[in-house]
Length: 141
Ligand SMILES: [Cu+2]
Image 1 (cartoon, protein in one colour):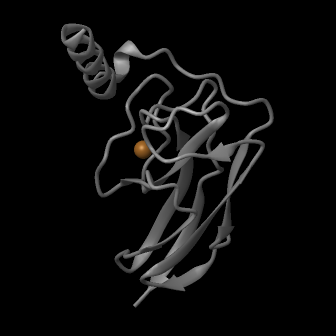
Image 2 (cartoon, helix red, strand yellow):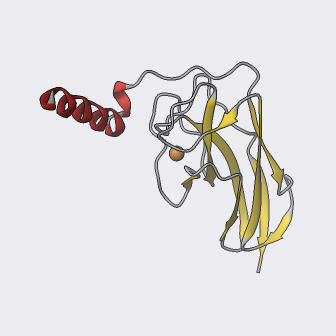
């Protein structure tokens, strides 16, 4: 019995760290992610208040595998991550794995693009990818 539990725990740990083993999750039909703010073309000051909108699906924290859910990723000055690839965790790809729906983002003065992409419980885009149009903002000092 102890060995069975150990194997089950080991399998869960492996599943948590090897996203390639997980099949891509189908996007809920009609799911949409979009910016509530800032508006495309807005001129703003840093830190920039960003509010995420989502319809047609729910939000769940990272690692929580509930049907028809995912969590937000803010992509800064980069394109969306191709379906099937792990969304990187870096300064240009910010995860909101707690299920957050807004953020304050520090950006250098100048033009920047912002995009939202939903990732599943393992940070992998759905198929097809649920992503917002890319918006451009100008940050002033
Ligand atoms: Cu993520």
